[in-house]
Length: 172
Image (tube, rainbow, N blue to C red; front, side, top):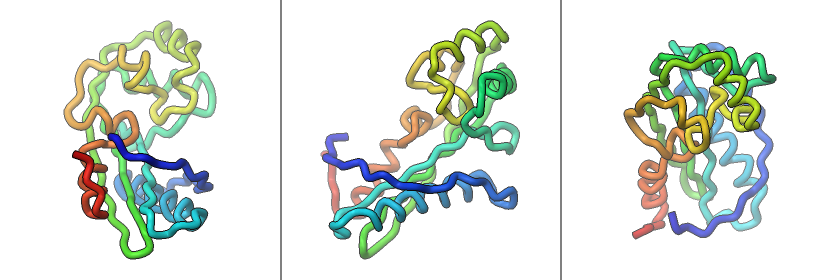
């Protein structure tokens, strides 16, 4: 995007309250991440961005897999289905807080257990919501998307650009 930035470590528990909708969950986590990082930096005039992504299948959040079996279970559940990827972005500074959310529908082709095993062996799904990364070999599973490709990767560029403008940061 052409924006200089610094990564600030943050420590946010990613626990899902079962009463929260998926939208509320990712929005809350994006804001908590931004707030935690904001309080760790010395210059509180500079905006801090936090984001969170969740994969939703039939209203259920598919988080990061705890092991190979859970990853394969998730991938097989996504097989030949359309799911949603929600990414919330929060941008804050000492004066204001702004948030947005991106929703993309992703349709998978039919997967076999062998394909999922081989994909696990790449190491790619171990730390990904829904057990896949569209920016890597997980793209082989994607039949089509409707929405933001960059949002599925974890940071919806169009929506982030709109937030940055609200903080006086113009990219082009």
